[in-house]
Image (cartoon, rainbow, N blue to C red):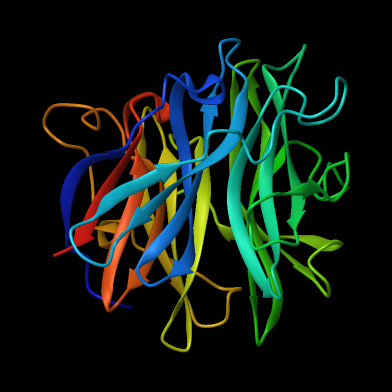
Length: 303
């Protein structure tokens, strides 16, 4: 396993654009996707005046001094039709580029509950123009309740490589009470990125009885295997880290995540939802802080 990463925080990088109706507050779950030449499209969810999440993006340039170049004026994806799994909001999780302008956007769909606070399931939207626009693959989720996964199933991080299609997703294991779900990280497979097979395989499990949530897996190639950043929570979110030779069996060592809360400021209470990219040999981490992204997205650069 690699030694601990060392990060230099650069502060808030992408902030809510309050003049845009889809982004009055929050910039949550940064989901970067390479454009080229050091430019990235960083998808995230902002919230409107009724607190519903929409997916939009910022264009950032990491080729020199990191800077934000532009924002989408309209959302890429808005909440779904009334009664659908995503009628109360959508949040990005991962983007897979299939070539010839075709991209898969895997996302979280939010739906209010009654006996429990919320329902969360994973959806898919598809672009045929290089990520400029997206259309839902289905108004139904692609990962719903199943025999092995009877609670929430969401935040699908999808990898498409020589080993096939792999999804790392957040899977509920129960509710302590109406407002406190428990969830960890499991794995699914597919032959086409559309239909997914799940057998209950757990990749990252709770480290202690005090841990309630393992959230937002972000998986990358690492040597001949994979590494994963994720968020873990007892009282407040922190970043975790794990490595795997095959994508199935993972060794967790959270110290190696290399980034934690600041003494003061916007990320002094929690850090979570990290996404890491490598550009021209440098690693960059986008992440959220206090309030689940209420202030925006921070940037850290490998030191």
